[in-house]
Length: 541
Image 1 (cartoon, helix red, strand yellow):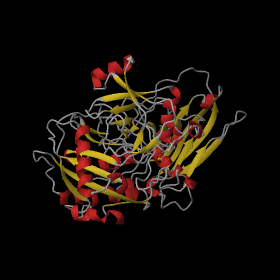
Image 2 (cartoon, helix red, strand yellow):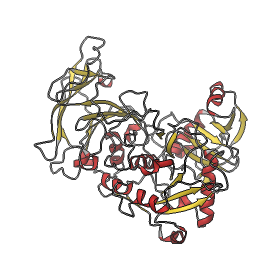
Image 3 (cartoon, one colour):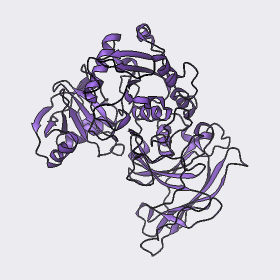
Image 4 (cartoon, helix red, strand yellow):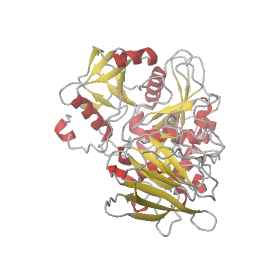
């Protein structure tokens, strides 16, 4: 049916970002930027972020191909394969309807782009966006937004190409690595259950309506599909399209309507490489090459994208995967380690929708008092102690800025469900994220604070004479159960200095330190942490 701009205009503009880039992938594999008037592009972003436009499943009618006059796109085409053509949105109301064509698009050849895909039947192509989206259950077609709880059904596809290339692991081994069907204890099924404290269950059991799937499985939750193309000389988009078509023809059903997550396992990458795995935001599909599917940390990262989670960047904002306190960085390349969850911004995103964590354990710091100092002192417990918190201490404190970009404070307790954490064990972490923390956003680790350390925001909320300073008074993980961090948030009078000196490296845990001024902050990284740009290991995205 028709969706008018009048209806869409009622959607809150504070929820979505204006940083999305959209592109079409034509049936021949060519990428075409999507353009339109400012009002049409704004409407497209709103449709994407309010859940009405669903990745890989929605058709947008009336788009036309034109020649691009945009020099930025022409420059991009030389480096990333994007066409000098453009797909123009119609000026009339955007008409959305379910798609009958199946294909996925990748924004470009960069390994760090996760994308959404929306199919356009008129052009015979895929409309894709490389950032935002809001996840919802693929078995729920009524337009409701994200649900991260309940039972989610997963299908794994072991891909065999036209020349017999397939992953060396059998379907039985793959089933065990992902679902733990033969006793493997380190798997994403268990860790999603643990991080959500029993609220999310992923299962290989198909829905009753898809019981016919069982006769086609080679092992619990795993189907094998032989595609009529070679991995050696075929692009990723064509491979994905072929896998989808072969599996759907074999099963006689649409994957998106019967499974919440579908994972494609390839022997390895031969064309358009540099990635270990990738996934689609606000969607159901993820793709793995080589042994990356074996690593629970990679699985939870990619399925996290399906569930609308953005990347987690580190203290160096040039490294968008560098937050190794969170699975949406890329900290765990291991078949034997899985005990890790997400950072405070992602935990807030879960809780804000009433999922995983009770909102009563999320505190919003949103008090501005220009006449006198305002002080908040609280004990914070880590997500690992979420179910061991009889006094109701917060697990996340959100620092409201009255903009789309806010800050999230948490205690990175490294034990239990988070015992394999790779960075800043048992320290306070400060995270920056957009979209008010409510939906897809890249987040950034700003500081890791030990006992006695502080972090200062100058001229908080634009107040000329007030800074906000966060101080960690104490951390106790030995005598107290649950362990906690005692923190103070306090407004102080701004100094007259325009700039504070560059902070020194973090001291030992028992020493006090001067305050750290934004944006620079010392870190205390776990020596086991892996550089996400290491040439030894392709990145998963």
